[in-house]
Image 1 (tube, rainbow, N blue to C red):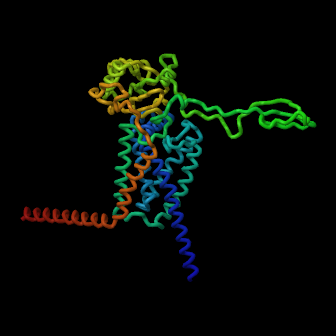
Image 2 (image 1 turned 180 degrees about the vertical axis):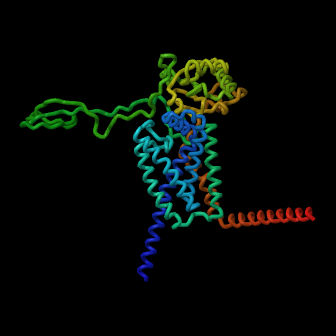
Length: 450
């Protein structure tokens, strides 16, 4: 009897550890996947538009932002609930249903390959379609185990306060959705980060090369490097030589590729990225759908650039007809250059967005609504706050994100009994108030009947 009890305890402990690890794997994956999309809603919008185009569902493109936010928020909140063990029955079931929908989709993507990257981890991590499919299969197997065994391990928070973790998670992610939509993504996983020097990022670092010399002695051939050549007095005879890459070194792919700007048919990329003066570019992947609510700020900035001798131009992937329509609607007098739409979308989010360059270095990426007012544009850029490089420190931003989420959650964990008691008292007062109101209504009805 004692041995059976010990075995049962060991089995129960093993199952609890497996549940704990399963929650970490699946929940962590969903939290990460949801959050990297939350901070860059436009990136997910573009990916949805690629999907709609591949599946010939272009009529859904106008709802891409709605799908983007909904998918990101659902993934994050489900992941949080699974990590915390909240709603132990419903959470793994919802994730299982979610994966049952997504896994066949990723299988089709892997076979047909209409899109090279599914975008499940945004720009933070790029997976092949087959890797994404196998990842989903693995998660599906693990979450199926949780569907049956998740109740074996208690939740981190009491049931009375679990809804608060979900509510704060929603507020948390919508805060970053707002920043990513109306400003720029709080974390930038793209190659065009603030502070990047474009000419340096375009450069290809060639690997070091060396000569190998072939010598022969007594019918035997051997290879030697320049610093250890054999002596011909010992009978070695030179045969040949060839050049090779130094062992362990390979050609390094540039950080930035396909950055090319045209004025008509002329490539003017070098004129722009090697300009040591300030240069402002209004980026718009599609002028036909660009937001024109801040054209006054844009035109004022252009007038300021003309007055102070700074180059200002719009870089777009629109058709000439789209450019003409924009000029007619906004009164734009600045020149228009052309660039690949995907590259423009990668450089900065939003349509349009203002890029500030100096010497090919990205100083700022700004939405038009955040441009300085014309009353502030009275001095040269080097004397204005707008002309100073924005400081982008990803490690500090990551710490801010972690603390912004972890501190309230830790406070709730430490005070959950008190919070649960307060919630209970509020519910009791609410129920008593409803009963009293119902009784008063019944009394009024009885009096009226009399």
